[in-house]
Length: 256
Ligand code: PEP
Image (cartoon, rainbow, N blue to C red):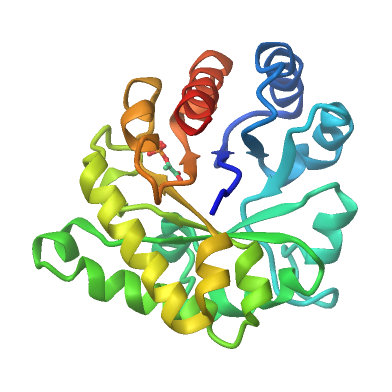
């Protein structure tokens, strides 16, 4: 089954609007002709609307880093799926480990958010992954099973087929440590098995499952040579045009 690879840049709380627009201007010139890879940029909320204008016609999609599940209401400080659509988003990162760790995001909230955004035809990028303690305790599979199963709970197979899931071992995020190509492939194949058990073969065959955690130009080709790894969620290396473009090029070569 052929799945279009995804390279998504998670900018976290980096870049002002002028910095974001300068990045868009440069990346548009750098990755011409790489339509084989779906590129997604996830800037801070403040840059979404103007980036949406700047990205028009580029083939690059826009994503948000979080969302609230209600459409509108008295929820001070929150942003709704309707507002993200309005700002030009097509993807939303849900359940990033930093949100789970610092903002009390539980599996139940992740599931609630996924249901809300699918209802507005936005594509979730659902993050799952174990901490270092959990990996050392040998419970990686148990953790990713629990997070994946809870995140997908109650979704229709056709919805899951459109989703993006990112396996991000927490110990590899922003640390310079990467899972080996083999370990990343093994956990991602395991996640695909969970999707198959819960949602059927078509959903498992179509959902894109990414690796995330210190992806850099130098480790991209190895990771992308693995059959179940459909791309990457990139943090630090997505902040510079040169490194992000290089990751996109290497993914395109590996998945051609
Ligand atoms: C991330 O934040 O999703 C991530 C993978 O970060 P980094 O690439 O910096 O490890």
